[in-house]
Length: 469
Image 1 (spheres, rainbow, N blue to C red):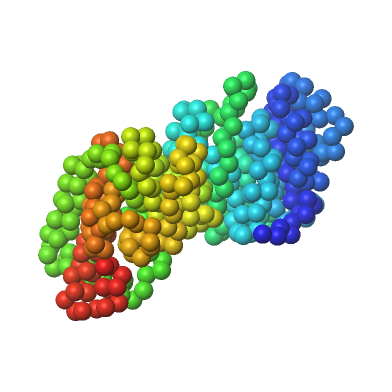
Image 2 (cartoon, one colour; image 1 turned 45 degrees about the vertical axis):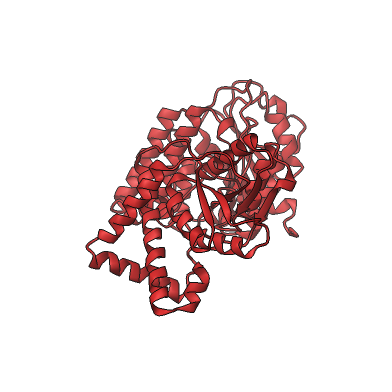
């Protein structure tokens, strides 16, 4: 893609408090990407300011420590004096690499009215456990208040459209030092400005200074801010549904549904109502039975890995479990042929299948053993495109997916004539609220599929039948 932005189109803002070990290196690297680098020294007591001598930056000094919120706000006001299009913020402690700025800018060009966030949570292993789980807790609350899923609400590596701050009213008190960036996401959402994540590495050097972020204290302040926002909107249950419930109850790419798909979905709901929920209960019990009882014998001539919607262009936890199961199988039977299914879904830039291939190759699986199907957007299309392809040597397949997904996926595969050996990605099933939501979603999708298939066969609807067999 050709990028029209020039270095003068955006300002880079770096708040700094006692960053003498890293600030010069970060500032010098930032200057290669913008002619306007603004550093706000927040009352440092070390040699932070001395380290910035002779660099062509704009230096703003707080006489006493005022906190990150006030420092960022001063930097934003300075940037707006230069009529920039975007405002880039990053930390001065070395956690954020200025070299990732072009990736964020590229996404900003695609979504100029969005906040672009450099998201780190896909790289769980590189993040201290306390920070990782504190961030996940904050993500839940902020996503609820904003009304849509958010990948990494606590990352300070961001690109803001400068007009966002024209009429923004927000607290910049010292107590709100680490509340500020969370509150921006909520206030922006109320102006219909959402955020989009770009995956970046999580950098936590062993010799780094202790973080200014206090997990317990600052997450508590963030939670109180979110609570005030939610109470002011009557708990904003729509936001809870859109951010946390809908992604699990209706996880597949259903925006492309046509008349027949909607018809069979409504028919499925009607059958549930007329049976007083009995048919759905049967679907749920069957899904639960397959979820708990399924295992994997790890010995196949060919395996099918079902892709899953990516998070920041990388496999999420469930998808990684599927891929790791494949790695275990190949370690036992090296000649196993691998087929990964899944096209581009959601806001990803690459296909689910290709992301899976990258992961397997990073784990020493040879390219020649991996075959991709990159057209499908959901499980039904996975099977349809697999059947139409010439990559399958016979109809007996080892089907790898998560336990909660096995019942529906295997029934759909059988509908296309495959002989299915179920292979659960996980060693065992773990009960909990989130797994329960996934089971309910799967039971609903399975019920929808069975009712649609029954309707098509009874009425001889060739268009529906062509999709499911």
